[in-house]
Image (cartoon, rainbow, N blue to C red; front, side, top):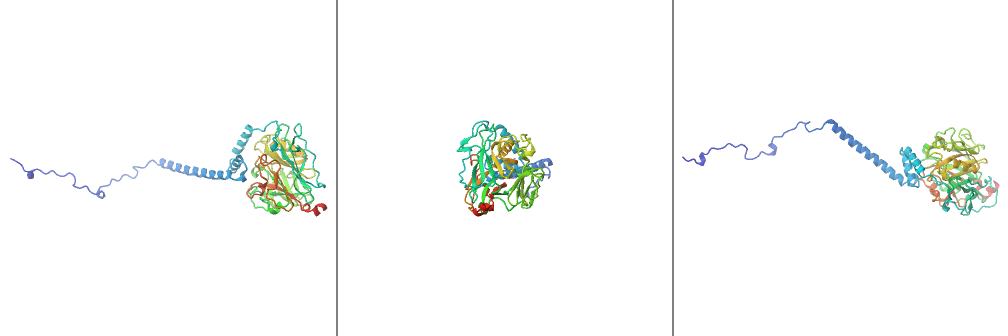
Length: 439
């Protein structure tokens, strides 16, 4: 018997004709903790993020400040000096000192030989009138080398007038050059002698040293002060390295240390150098003039007319741990003679003993070390008629600039100059012919 299609059995449907919409599909919700990592993983991630942010912040800060320092003339002339200044400002002083020490071990001062012609100063062309120098110019210095050097028309050790003259044509500054010792004969150092009867002294603060300003006398040298300016030269170490204090404008900026080598300037412009608490103090000078400023730097290197003992010892805190006293590098010093004249010494290839010995040769009875390294050692004299405003273009460095002394004579006329310095100017009675003759 045949079966029709209508009689065929109908299979039950196992799925709907159309799929339900997504909205109606049942959702499977996982347990909230089913996909979480252990807690320590998240703490580690947070620590990594914090470390990366901190590292980028530190690197960014140091990168910006380093870039600023390397392009800032107040940090020095050379790349090395700017890098060193930046390092010391950012807590890397120990690293900088170590690097400088290692560098000087690998690059010691040259032994023997003769100086290059461009390192010897030329004779200053200063025409002086006949007259009596208030203080007697010292006799020619005896060179430590075998025979005196004759270069650029100048005999080693002989004094030549330099800088602005008095109204009557008398020089206030005399200069010479000399070898630092009998071993490093290819170097010459400059020596300046200053007549303090003609000159009055002043201590100028820098934009950063000693800090705590502003003070009435601060870089730059003003146009008014430049009208009687004769000379300007560097002061001592940065205060954190000077092992001494600083007093100016009736303020103790940094406490004065008993026993420290001190440059004292009185209100009348007279100056003295000695051991604080023994030779000098806050008492007025012999004329009753009160103390105007005190700049301390380490300990005396010359006392009672001779070099003090122990200067060749390395890493002696009395004379600065940086580099050690026996390294022959660019150094400077200041001394006072028995009759009150000032003597400045500055140049390359010197140990602390060489600085002291040169000061003694020039007649100093007491003396101290000032700043060191090529970027900071500078002595400049300035010329021009009295009353003429100067801007540094009338200046001449004690040793040739820039072949020996890196600092331009205009440095002390820059508002950005960071370090303190001394300024020597004509006293009022030497600014006019009438009063100069009467004096």
